[in-house]
View 1: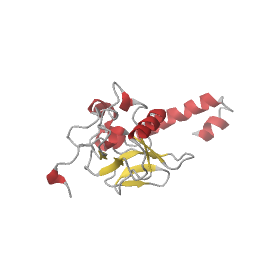
View 2: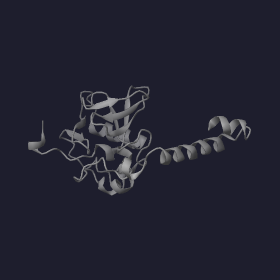
View 3: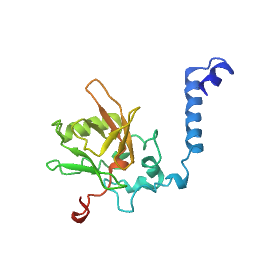
View 4: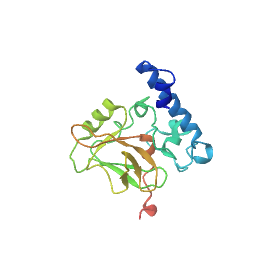
Length: 186
C-alpha cells in the first residue's frame, strides 16, 4: 500500500500517509481472520471470571488475546474506573495468569527487585502494564519481531526495549486469568 500511496497519488502529507496506512492495517485485520470463528469473540479465554476488573473488557477486546499479533486493548483501560492493580495487597507477591490455560506468566516482585510502586508508575506512564526481565516466568515467550506470547499461544503484548532494557508492554486482559485451584496445579 505504501508504494501506491506515494507513486500513484504523489507525495502525501505525512499525516495523510499515516492515516492511509492505519486504514489499510484495520482493513487487513478484518480481512485476515479476526472473525468469530478465529477468536474475534475472545473464545480463547476460559469461561472463568477474569481478575482485575477485566470482565468489562472481555466482550469488546477479548479477541486481542486470540489469533492476534499486532493489536492491543485501549491504552490505560486497566486503570478505569479504578486502578485494580494498585488495589492488590502490596506486601504479597502478585502473580498474573494466562486466562486461556492458567499458566503463571509474570510475578511481582520479580528477581529484578523492582517495587510494586515502581511497576505501577512505569505502567501508568506507558498506558499498559510494563514488566521487566526478572518478572517473567518460563511460560512467557518472545517471538521474532518482539511479540510476547504465552506457552499456550495467548497473545500477551510486545517487547519494546528502552534505554534501561527490555520492557514487556502487556495487555492486562490477556494476563488476568484466575489463580488456579490447588487441584489444577501441575
